[in-house]
Length: 177
Image (cartoon, rainbow, N blue to C red; front, side, top):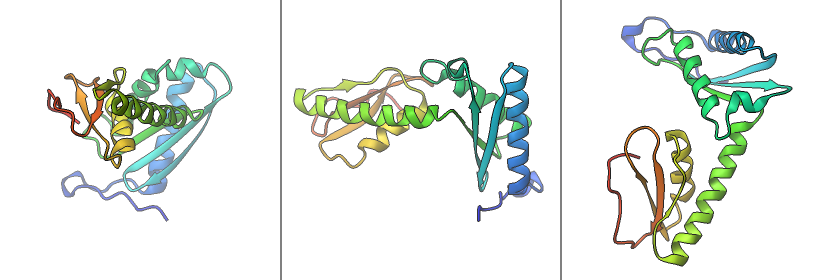
């Protein structure tokens, strides 16, 4: 059975798991309906984390964006709505037609491919610009590969990830991941 959310002492009583699921589904259905989408929405809760799945029959790309930037923006709005603009007690992860599942697999494949490239060339191989959630996939995928090291390049929310041989002289040039 999922854990019930435990609010911080100063925040008063939190939502039960059932209430969190119901509210998450409701705010997601409302947002998508306001955008003109009919969606089958479901949710699964684990503590203060709720995974919301939305299935749409058409125009999925309008809700995801080419690289998931629209999905991420919708996820942000849903989190603000769910948390009523207060501190983030609850974390909502939005999945649209398995987009994030496919994107994760794409990022894992990319990470492994860039690791091979870095080892073969003896230098850095660099990803495109990624958000924090995407960068984490790259770092975690290569965490146990002792041949390489990973580090973020850039500043701000959107950065690239460099993959380099473990003994590569260069390295992180910024703070981050």
